[in-house]
Length: 437
Image 1 (spheres, rainbow, N blue to C red):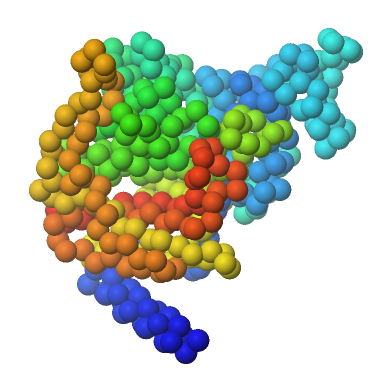
Image 2 (cartoon, rainbow, N blue to C red; image 1 turned 180 degrees about the vertical axis):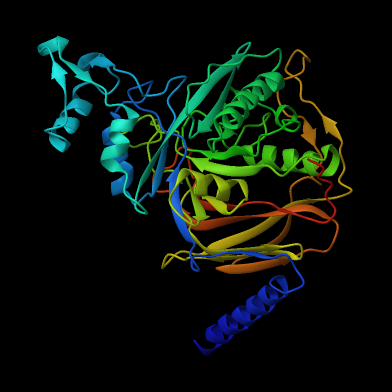
């Protein structure tokens, strides 16, 4: 017992000493920790309802996330905003009678219906109606969004737009890259025209294995993509040919920061919820992935400002007490769950990384639409610490460093077998990077 206590004290002492170096007055350090007018807000930025292909009503979904302890939720139905009058036949909705019965039980005086039997219809509440009922200052916020669902040939290309004012139609393009860029440009154009804060983010790059790292690397105006998506059909881990979303992240970061002079790309975790009545590996259930945003208030403007500044982390189950970053390094402290152990990995790429790539081919020798087999120089694990706190100090040749925190506890409702609870800190750009935009 005394030996364990001594080890814990020594570890804490080293962490505090390293933290003091990162927070030295001469450095441009930023500490992400609740306090001083800032607090953590938990939110999901990818949600579907009866307005497209979800199996529940807006108000029932808003209620689920509120009861689960979230502070904000972005509704992102496919190519539509929930702001018109729409009636649906209950038995023809994805949720059918089960969703309807829950709606009637939870909101008995708030259901507009007509007809009966197999022709029973319910009016879908608009976003504005649901927001007026649920929004509470500093407690809960609903945000209007859209999943701009586009494609190039057979590849699905989906861009979420958070806090949109008007629906944005798919913009199309002559390649995967051009299709992404055109849709990102459309979101930015609406933001500039309306003065309304809004952001685009690329959804599930491995859905249909549509988006390669090479497609995402040169995109301008795009700061976010989903490193974790809770839908069971999006292949976060990739396969023997296709890169995982984390591998895509490192490739994008290495080339944006090391060659293209473009800003950092941030990683989000989302639910992509479609199925609210059953939980299991075949359902796109709610509660699997989220972001924790450190902001001054619970408003779209404050949340988006914090996201664009990188003041957040992504999670599928691990909570953090603090993240400290500066030109000198990165420090992470976990908010531990009793009985769980944690592994903190610092991952990055150095300036003079090997750029070699051998694109894979199929059985006929034809190139496969996938990210090539790049050097292991990209996305190296620089350090591994098995503790609730750890610090990485820059050596001076890093393009960036990010942190991945993994619990030894398995995800309670995984979308892929044997997933563990994790968190992902945003990349810290090193002095070796070239960023001109």
